[in-house]
Image 1 (tube, one colour):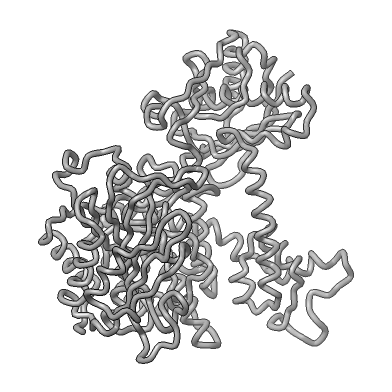
Image 2: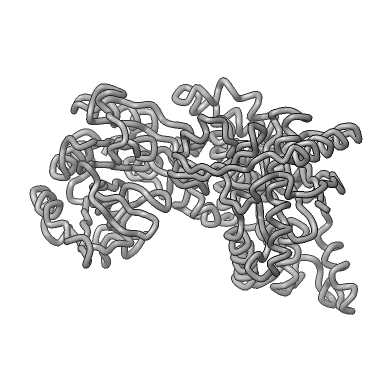
Length: 605
């Protein structure tokens, strides 16, 4: 095998598939365009979903039925595993696609030729898996026969749905059986592909996109049989260049070198821990640069929460709070700016936003954790230190560690780095239980306006909450009228006594502004405006001017509530029929709940 840089691999891949009749398409942004089923772009096929579904014509849009791309991708499922030898959040996906053009046999032929003739991977190291079938979808004997042209039967294994049925990337969408190509890492493996991560590495997934999965997980045939393949550039580079992980390839090596040279990074007592820390910073800041370049903003929800989480986890790896991300950003942009020009054009903005987030997080990083623990224990009569032992031997109960995490924002990574001793698995169970409760509460939301415990309330309370819910729509519109269209909903919660509405705005409202908002809401109530509802396609709703701030939760068909010609929002209800039913609205409070986010409380009489 020959040594190849990431740039050479990208070019070799694209040139090969263009030569074979594919049209090169640019990478789509990480922030999906009008795809409410996912928060971020997680696969190379996502920008092509309309063509797989038969909703758009690729011939008309870009002049062909074959495409190839290198797609920016970000997956959140492995965030906590980043730091080991294999897991990444951001990565580049090499892909080739057929929209009702060639079949799985041609896809396998193209894959084999590329791997063995273009990349010169040794054929004796390659294995394939196929779908073994179930009661719904039969065994993929067609792919099996195609691989037998190149591989002996013992190097073709059949696997179940977990490993060899792909998609959809969201809750619904195109999907199908797949055939994976695995590279053998050891001379005499004792297991087969998908049984171990030490003897094989999956390098390419060929998905035969033939079905659509609906909300009930029911499969129905797509209008045409398609091909969707995905091959991670970083993992492929690791195999080609014989490194032990993607972090030793040229996609990461220079970034890690810069990180370890930063004066405030420091070094750990043990090399494995030091390596893990550097990998976390490299992956998370590289990913953050790409997220920021594609328009993701720091927040406490959705894509912004993911961005905040990875940046703060990266910050946890530094020994002091005086570090700067700027040298890392400069390195990432220098490495990738030629391929992704949006990094270069937004580099100053990326640096400014990362530094602002770092400064905000410094308030937590500068907390004396030992003092916090002492205060937590003061009421129990326990000492914060075991007798005769210093901070390095500090022991925490699972509940104490959870409270530090949930109440004070102190991450488990930081507790570990500060040499606190606790049972991490037990703490993670508590965190998961806490998240499950939060998710359960989220299922009671209607278009983002939380109606707490509505099934357990009296009819009188439910009626009052419905009035408050409609009042929230008026409040949102009034805030945008008074403060500007940059105001957007960041969260809402309603109980029988009050409404609470969080919105984006950089400063405290003046008394005059608050009075004006309250007056406008009451003016619209007095006008007894009709509240109407209409169901329409998501994009048609957005085009009509309806507001939507929870894109990941909207199906293809959405419900739009309008209040006269004053307010129009995507929402699930419930609502009253006329604003006159609300009663008199009173704004009872306004405060900050985070950087750039304000909270209003109000009620009706």
